[in-house]
Length: 546
Image 1 (cartoon, rainbow, N blue to C red):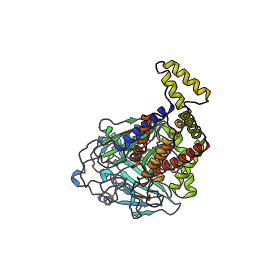
Image 2 (spheres, rainbow, N blue to C red):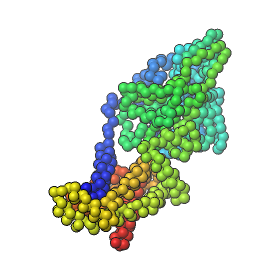
Image 3 (tube, helix red, strand yellow):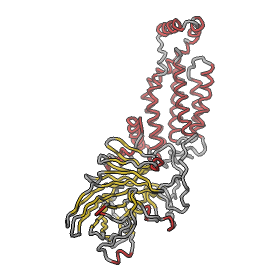
Image 4 (cartoon, one colour):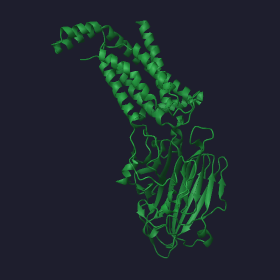
């Protein structure tokens, strides 16, 4: 039986290799045919990008080809001839809708910037000059066939609608197909919210019955060559029952996942932001995730139904375009907080995020909040770590006697183990006492790692001096170097097992971790640095006591 030091070294090395390999060798995106450089860009594009006419091919409805031929119905000629863009301004966002298909063509977040610079442009979740990439696309099948770019008349004569604080407003679009189907899309806005209510009503104006199904598609421009965070999920995600079904975009080239009526909502996510459609009641019998060239589709399809002449049917949807802020998403309801997935250690991650936010509420600085949370965690684990280091110190004192026993019974392992256990019992030393308390802390580390890596709270959050963004790496690598030095001091104070090979490994660990932490978010490096400093204080106290 080897000492607990072997276990500790193995665990630390596994952690170092796993995290180091992930950060030093991130997965590369699969090669794609490069899209035209002038093609419209989605989220985070500061300026609208023009799309050449020759690449504006007919769009697909959830993967099913439908020609974009206008269906004028009974609309006035003036409405058919022109396309209007209506802008809705609230405190949270600025949205632009087109009368062509009653689709959303732009959505800008007023409270979030593209970079940490003071003059940085706001984040645009949707940003396109081409209707090919417009989202909230409504189409139909069979008797409900509706062109993607069907012209809609608008109930507002104003092209700018600005909501006052606490005010609500509705925007209604109406179109009639050549078959006599009236389609009315009503968007309801409320100032102070990122959510929008969408009500789609279809009415049969024809002389005979109409049968078919309606589809609502969430659409997103996707560029495989765009630089994304390799350690956070980006792409389609659907809540099916209690499970969040994430789909890697590269897999959509081979398959298009389909979910049943148990899909609570479907979304397209980036690291910090999300577009979500929540079907209400019977608004979606089927949800399908697919890809068409440079577009992602999350398509919600109703069940087939029949409208008798003069009858109507209504379908309601809850829409959300905004940040992945846990408290905000909880307040919106519809289980939207499940869009934030901290993985296996979520049960620990969410409370840690809560306390981090709690400290920020008083300190108004996330750097100080991280330090405060680190101190609290260290206090909670102080008895365990104290026991761990005390046990390791006791084991170190027994090394001379243990070495004598190994030499004496080197050919009889059974007797050696028996003698070692007797030695432990005599001196009241638990050989695993130094290891188990440290193992208990590993889940907390991984949970906090996920919180600091993915939490939008740290996005562009400044700390002090040169650290202007806690979600980004230290631009001058000062904190990783300090962290490495603190780890070196900590390693020197840690009792060793007397094994020369283990001593060499432990000597190199600070160097390995320093290089590994160079590209870590500075918020995570601050946590590790402060934790090391507190551990050094604790180890010094144990040495003085013994």
